[in-house]
Length: 316
Image (tube, rainbow, N blue to C red):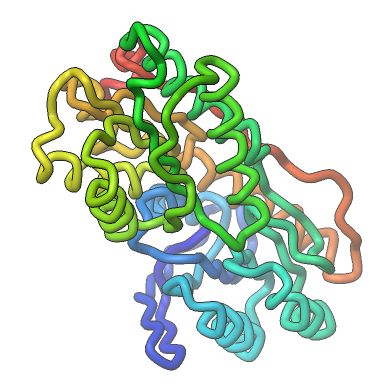
């Protein structure tokens, strides 16, 4: 949902890039993508997929990095409206905060696509079942605990997910429900740490290790958080076979560490790169339907658990 094109929005700087439209497209359309935070690998992978396919679909993309700041996201949408784009895609930190700018966009004749979380008034929606996504992640961790510990209480588990965000709280609930369904008697070290970046993951684990030095399992909302958790666990000397970290998104670095047999034991693949082409198609479909068309059916993303057992399938 992002690509490169110039945009300076009060401290939000986006790079510019215009690719030639393909022979199949009579004219180029402009699509603005407002993302939560471009330090998160998931968003980088989706953007890469868009960059690699936009010329084929005759799309010029303008990307706004919200930097995990709701005001920057709102300002980004306002600037995209002013620039006269043909469609706006938003992955909101707060869906409620985006309702007014979505309304303004549609009134300006610009359709809006919700990304991940639903924003009232949007014309279209690409999303995933966050509860099930988290459940798949928690299942990996739960199975590892069951196989590794004779007494599940020896598993001191930390759950890291974003609090205050309905969809991501659902993901966190799925993570916890899955682990508890497999091994009900675990020791929960913490389930209140919040964050979705590498820095947040590292800080969250550092905080919990101070109060529970026996922490040995960390279930993370995404792979960026998992990488931060990995650094914190490594700094604490927790790099042996008695420790486990799981995440979501199937980022390349995490896949590499799973293959290497590190304490990162699993992730869940949602085909982030492939979502780039999916977005190109949805953008054109949404523009064709127009800003007055109401949302019909959402498009759901598929996902596949990845562990050492099937990591060879992801060698590339």
